Length: 111
Length: 225
Image 1: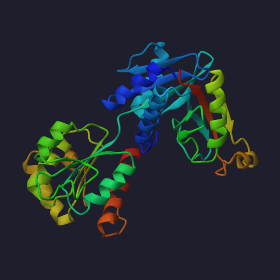
Image 2: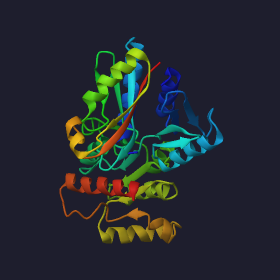
Image 3: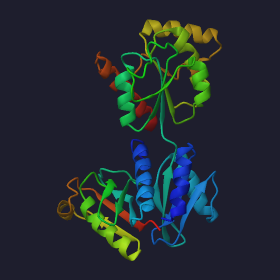
Image 4: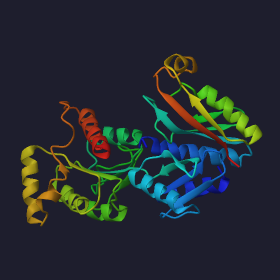
C-alpha cells in the first residue's frame, strides 16, 4: 500500500461516515487488483454519495466518472459490483486509462 | 461495507492500532481482523495477518471464492528534533507524504507556533519526548539541532527502538565525533550504523528545502527498499 495514501484513507473513511450520518446513500469503490502500469495502488478508495459527489481516487482521474455512475447504481439497488477497466491499450484509451494499465474496482454500498 | 465495519476501522485508526478488513468480492463476507483475530476461517486469518505484516492490500482465492484484504496500518510518523530552517520544508513534505509529524525542541524561542503553525510541537527534552511518543517500526526520527545536548538523547532512544529511519544532520567530521560519543555511551557498531549521516540522499542541493527533499527521499527509500 502506498503510504502517502494513509492520510487519504482516513479522509475517505471519515467522509463515508459523515455522509452516512447525514442520511445520504453512500458507496465505496476500492481498487482490488491492478495489471501493468497503474497510477493507484491496490486498496485505493473512492467514496460516492447518492448525488454523485465523490472524494478520493482509484485511477488518478482516468476512470472516476465511470466508477461514480456504477456506484450510484449500487447505492440504488444495494448490489455490489466488480468493474474491469482497460483491457487493451485501445480500450484503455477509451475509458481514459491512457497509462495503458488495467484495474479492477470493487464497488459496495455502505449499509 | 457494514456500518459497524466502518466504525471499527475508524476507531482503530484514531488509536494507532493496526487493523485489516477482509471481504469477499460478492459482498457476502465483511469482517475486521484485529490482533490477528476475527470471525473468519483460519487460512483467511493467516492471509490477513501476513498482509498486515507486509503492509500490502491484495486479492486472493479461498475455497473457490474471490476475497480481498485491505490493510489499515497506523499512519507513518516523523519525529523531527530541532526547530531549525530545514525543519520547515521537511515538515511540509512529510505531511504531504502522509506522515503524522511531531516537532521536538525544548528551546521555547525556536519551536513557536508562529514559526511552525501546522505541526504538533513538543517542548520536552528529546529523550523524554521520544519515550512518551513511543517510537515504533512505522516511525522515522530525524535530528537537526547540530547540538549534541539535544541530538544525542534523541538518538539514544531512536537506536534502541524499531524506528525504520534514523537520520542525523551534520558533516562527516561532526558525525565522527558523534560516533565516538555513542560508542562511549555503549552503542555497538550495528546500532550506530543505522544512523543516516551525512543525512539525506546525495542530490547535491544546499538550500534548506533541497536538504529537506533529500531527507524525505531517503525516508521513502528506507520504507520500501
